[in-house]
Amino acid sequence: ILDMAMEKVPAESGAVLFADVNGQELYFASARGPKANEIMQFRVPMGIGVAGFCAREGVSLAISDAQRDPRFYAKISQSLSYDTQSVACAPIQLEGRVYGCLELVNRAGGTTFSSNEVNALTYIGNQLAQYINRLIMSREKI
Image 1: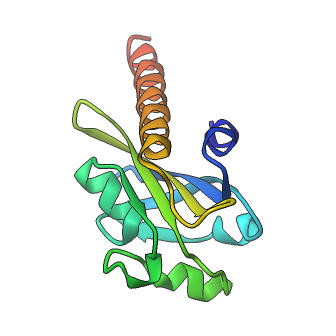
Image 2 (image 1 turned 60 degrees about the vertical axis):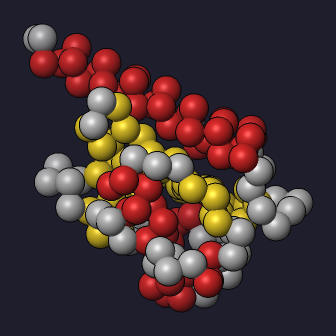
Image 3 (image 1 turned 120 degrees about the vertical axis):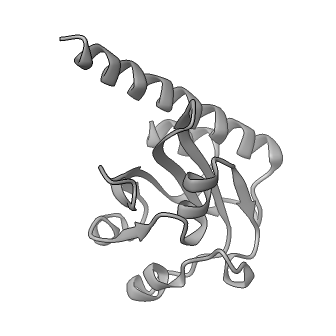
């Protein structure tokens, strides 16, 4: 899913974050980019940062100057010495149930993610939520 998202919306880095069982934190389930291996150890508190905000509020965002946005969670970028400039994020959510979010960082070949790109990311996040929901429902029937 992440590879497809990054193919449709070109970005330097990307991640799929899932909510933990208690819905208190997001953990990195998959990552691509120059710091992909290192980022896997981090967790993001629900509601904190762009990813936490998108997941909790169920909204998609595109931010062209991440460093100036009050929702930006600089701790991870600083820990990895990674320069985050632009961010696009979409929730993985269905019928009020939060599964996580898709996040793309640093638009490739440009400074900002377009509204069409955010719409594409939102669509991918919605389809992933439907898939996850079907998996959960099929296991509950067993």
